[in-house]
Each structure stands twice: as structure tokens, then as C-alpha cells.
Length: 254
Figure (cartoon, rainbow, N blue to C red):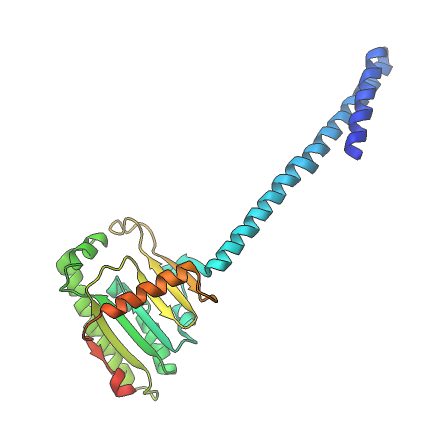
């Protein structure tokens, strides 16, 4: 109502100014300009800016709803992920480790601490160093086939030895470890714990090493979201392709 009144009075005064002379014309003309400007600015604020703002808010709300339904809990650089917090309450952890040495340096110590603090079933899967898939994976990660194969073997031995030493000093004997290899191509590293799944995405140009690896953490949702189903189906498929374990104390601990 104020907008319409400002515009109408402004137009009226503008017409009056055309018929006025001298100082009166200047005064009336100024008042007309001010009222017209007020009407235009108010109109722009009320109907254009507020509409655009409302549309932005609705778009953000819809995006948040989509993110929530997809189960996305967090997206962070790998160095910013608190693995100890993720492992604190879980009783099972399954890892598909694409970069064994880096995984051993970052997450493995947290797994050992958690396994010593409470019963924990640990499953670790590496690419088979003798598989036909190795060359492709090594090239994708910017490594040589021989170097990548040696890294896998070295990490697998270290994990087994460190587990045995750590477990000998634990009061908790219920924690169990199984190390498997698989002849398959995994596009990303994956960590599955109770209640959530972490997708560890390498940079597009992994060989350059200029970008940090991203971690997408998906919480479990009722009925399984598409990303959750995609991840869990992928982990299950890889697990089913594993042959004889490189190491396992599951039978001794059960």
C-alpha cells in the first residue's frame, strides 16, 4: 500500500510541477522525485530482492534435505578426519586400502588402540600384488607395478607383526584381525564401521600429489540411501572375491 501511495503521489506532484513556476516548481519537482524514488526502491526491495532471497533459502533448504536423505554426514580432507572418534564405538571395521603405506601410517595405529581398548573385529583388504589388476592400479596411483606390489607385501607383513605384538600385551583377547588380498580393481579406499561408511577418494591426478585426498562419511539411514547401498554392495562384492587370507586369527579368537 505504501509503495502504491508513494508512486501515485509522486506522479501527481510531478504533473503539478509541470504547471508550476519558480521556487514552487523546484520544491514540488523535488518532492515528486523523492516519492517516486522511494516507491521504486521499496518495490525493488519488497518484490524483487525478497523474492530472490526466499528462492535462495528454499533452494538451500532443499539441498540440505537431499544431503540428509543421501546420508552424507561429513566431507573433509583426509588429514582432518578423526579416525579415533570414528573407531571409538564400533565393534567391527572393514577396510579396503588402496594406498597401504599411507593407511598404515594414519588409520592403522588408531585401529590398534581401539582393538586394545574393546573387542574389535578387523578386516583389511589389499589388492593382490600378483594380480592382473595391479598394473592398472599402480598406474592410476602414479606408482610402478613393482613398487606398488612391494608396498602391499611390506604393509601386509608389518600389519600382521604389529597386531601380534600388540595383542600379546592386551588384556582384551577378543579382538580379531583378518588380512585378505583380492584380484579386483577398487576405484577408492573404503572404511566400513558400525553405523557409517567412509569413502576415501583419491585426487583425479593422484600422481601429481598436489591435491588432498577427500573423505566422504555416510551415516546409515533407514532403508539405505543410494550412496550407502552402492558402497555396501561394493564392499560385499570385494569381500566375496577374496581367497585364502594372508593372515587371520579369527578362528583362534572365536
